[in-house]
Length: 90
Image 1 (cartoon, rainbow, N blue to C red):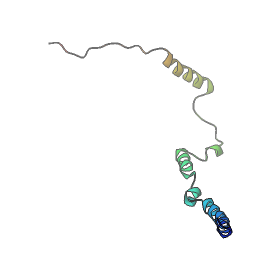
Image 2 (image 1 turned 90 degrees about the vertical axis):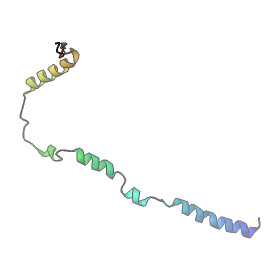
Image 3 (image 1 turned 180 degrees about the horizontal axis):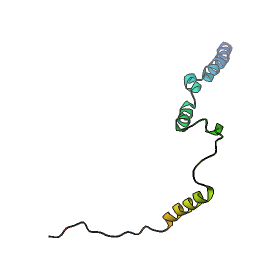
Image 4 (image 1 turned 90 degrees about the horizontal axis):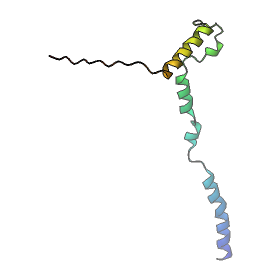
């Protein structure tokens, strides 16, 4: 290689590196995460629920606790099943 060829090569290397630096997806980068934010917003029933200062009405603590205990116990003891025959004999 001659000296002019090396100079041209050295001049073209920075230009090539600048070309590689350009991001090809500016449109995608602007909208990154919108799908997740939209999905979270659609799954939120009441976005202002934390501002509600009214007390919750319904079961008291003891009744709710007993209800939950009975619910959990229903999975531990198997349900009694009875066999029945719906076939009619003539």
